[in-house]
Length: 185
Image (cartoon, rainbow, N blue to C red):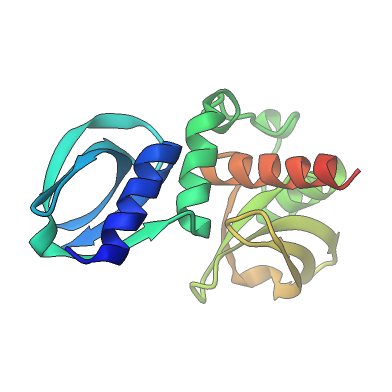
């Protein structure tokens, strides 16, 4: 184990921050409980931020360690906000008693300013708010999985395979957007 890796593991342990460790056995997320030149002991968590157990990893099999990058911060964010991220999914009001189309769901999302995930036939899924919808197109204000604005996209309505109204990812993104808005004020 090199000095840079030792330093990073010590920083993660002292600050009680999540690390992502890539090894020949896979990628593991967790908190460093202890480490030495041979092993690192992690309190592991899932990509949803849920604690799963304690695991030892041989440092000779570790290829990369990530500390405080966007992905790791997203996992920490989920862990610290479970009441919102894992809340009961909210269904769109009034859509349970009418004939539904993708267009009607998207129109409702636009009306209530609901962040949705759009799965497309072109496998270019995106997250965003529906800005405008016409008979055959929609304009989406797009956000990354980290809640960062990512411009606008126009899609052919027929290209939308599925609309995800409220799940772990969309609730996380909405919470990140709201948090950034509060911090900016």
